[in-house]
Image 1 (tube, rainbow, N blue to C red):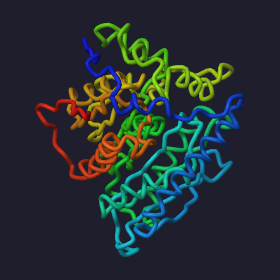
Image 2: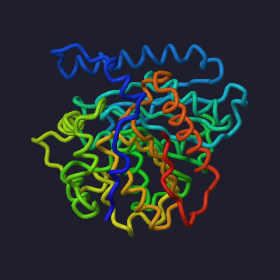
Image 3: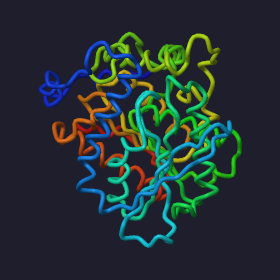
Length: 358
């Protein structure tokens, strides 16, 4: 039975930062909160892009949705020093934000940094639709449509359809984990091109499925990350529940053990043969233990796996940038090196311990 309590606790740098974390103005509706958070993120990204923009070529795309009602937004990023006709490996990226937050513009700096660091990859960011306007399974459908479009139309952004790594942050990592499982289950042609998955601070279960998972696999669910980090900064349990309520409204019947909703409770047989996986997990995150359990399950079933633990910092700590310089540097390296490692077609290692970043 698993016990991850050794990863509890807050880092001195994060503790020092806590009193200075801005809170959204009180009395906001979901819509005004969404606008406020997206605008704040976009403003920060515009500042970041002042030093990045001349190193990448950015192009917008439209992806037909399966329901035929809209075009899904997408944006590609290529190294500025690579010829436009050079076919580069593809990093298909899904942003975080609890399925509520995020726009094309909020991810420009993240995607650009990956392109600049690797030098020979094209990133395609798929801006799936968001709550509260769109609920389950729209986001999952959009992610699958995004992959199939990228696989069939790689030439539109200079990508190599035979070399695709999928990855995401938080909710985007949930979509990633579900996507690779779904394509394996379907026997899709695109599955053969999936060389890896990068799961940063992933949410992998809905709450009922999480309770069952922890009861079955943790030494003591009472000291789980869900309990110990219930009031963590950035993403307390109350915020996780709000996002879930918006995504899975009570008037909509949803099976929370659906493999797309809760990829973290897949069977051993279902995870065998999945592409290599990189995990970036925050120690001060309610979602920590489900990520660690899934990483162990993949490795135990023959999936090459690398697991990184950012100790002492919360879910989404990368937003603090230089205020958490060491943790932010580690985050960028895990994300960038994770894509690079997946593209190297890694083999299973006999012993793959958790790599702790303090």
